[in-house]
Structure formats: structure tokens, C-alpha cells
Image 1 (tube, one colour):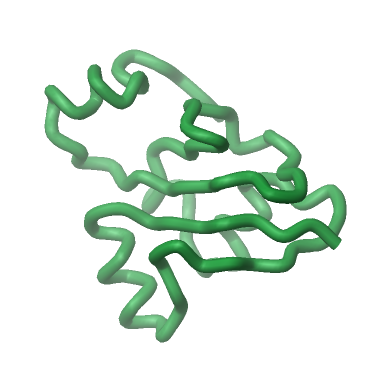
Image 2: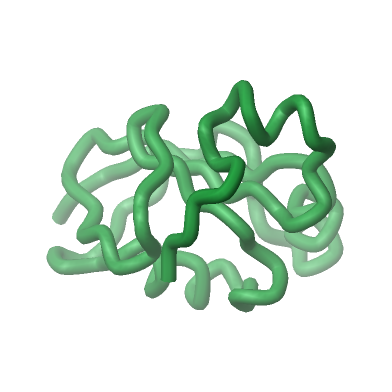
Length: 95
């Protein structure tokens, strides 16, 4: 089974902490075929919570199937403007 490294940013850290779930540099074992969206649901987050998913430092759609050793990060809505450009998700749409 694949193992990934998971991170959540900004407001999502608070949400996960309230749910007593880990959120920083967490090593997670996932099932084969797990998508970013499936991981989002496993972390008890919704599409309203997560604006963008990064896989290995790149913005990816939630339908992306995660692989062994992937680095996955969720970014919430409300990230300030300049960071949106620097992180590469300004005007990107990923369903």
C-alpha cells in the first residue's frame, strides 16, 4: 500500500486539530487507487474547505490518483492574493 506525506495549510490546520487529526508532515498509508478527493474525505474535509490540492509541489485536480511517496497538501479558500500567484493556482479550476 502506498505511503504519502500529508500537509494542510492555514485554516485547515485548525479544522484538523479540532478533529484530532494530524496535519503537518504526516506519513499516511493509503489504499491503492486513492484520489486526492478520497483523501480529503478521509480527513473529514469538504470541497468547501479545500480550494487546491498540491501533489509533489504542483496544483493537481482532486481526481488525481495518489502514488507511493507523493507529497500531498491541501490549501483552503481564502489564501491571500499574492500567494495565489506564487503558488500557481490563481485562476486555475480543478474539480
